[in-house]
Image 1: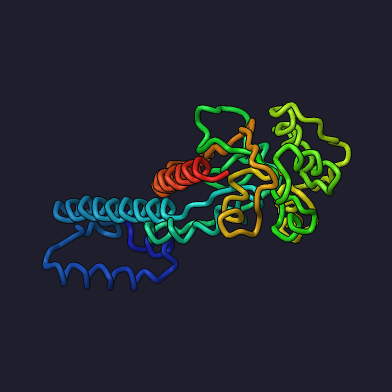
Image 2 (image 1 turned 30 degrees about the horizontal axis):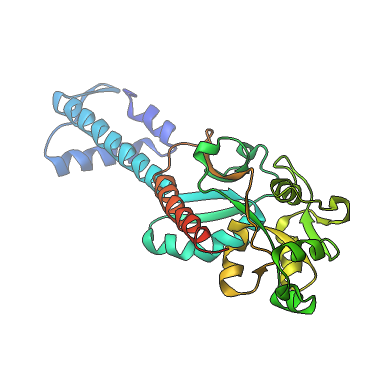
Length: 288
C-alpha cells in the first residue's frame, strides 16, 4: 500500500487532489477515519485496517464466485467428436432426445475422418469405432448385406433362397469402404459364413456412408454395419439381401479426452448414449 496520496494518484493515473477528495468522501460516508495523516504520509487507522481486510475478503469472494460461474458455464458446453457416417446416420437423428432431456447442456458435434489421435482436437470426448476394449463397447455391432427394394426387385433377389441369393449377389455390383484397422467388413462377413466373395471386385469408397448412400440409390449391394443401417431398415429404404448376419469385429466406444477437465454434461451424455445404444442392440435381436 502506498503511504502517500501523491504516489497513489500517480499509480492510478489521476490527480492527487482527486484521491484526497475520494478518501474524504468515503470517510464522511462511513463516519470513521480510515487514515491517520502524518505530514506528507498517511497510515491506515485501526478501523481502516479492519475495513481493508474486510474488503480483501469481499473481493476474494467475488473472485471465487466468478470462477465457479465460469467453470459451470464451461461444464454446460459439451463437444463430442465422431465419424461423419455415424453422425449423419445414427447420432444426429437422435440428438433431439438428449437435448430435450438435458436443455442446460450446450452440445456441439464435431466430425473427423481420422480419429487416430483425437486428443489433438478440442473435443471433450470422442465416439470411436475400434476393435479394442471390447468389454467397453456401447453395443455389439453386426454386419449384413443390404440393398434398396428397387434393386432387389430388378434383380429378382426376393424370389431366391438364401443360398441362391448369395450366389447371385457376387455377380452384382458390391459396394464397400476401404479396408481399415477394423479389417474389411465384406471379408469378415464372408469368412464367418465360409463363403467365397471376390473381394477384388468390390467397388471401394473412403467411407461406409458413401457406399450405403449409393445402395439406397439402387446402385448396388452394400455391407451394412447395424448401427449405420438400423434406421434405413426400419423405414424400408434398405432391406437385407440375405438374412445372414455376423458379429462385427469392432464396436463403438465413448472415450473421454484425458487432456480436458471433468465435464458434468459428459456423464449425462454417456448415460443417454448407453441407453440409446442398448435400444439399438434390442432392435438387432428382433430384426433379421
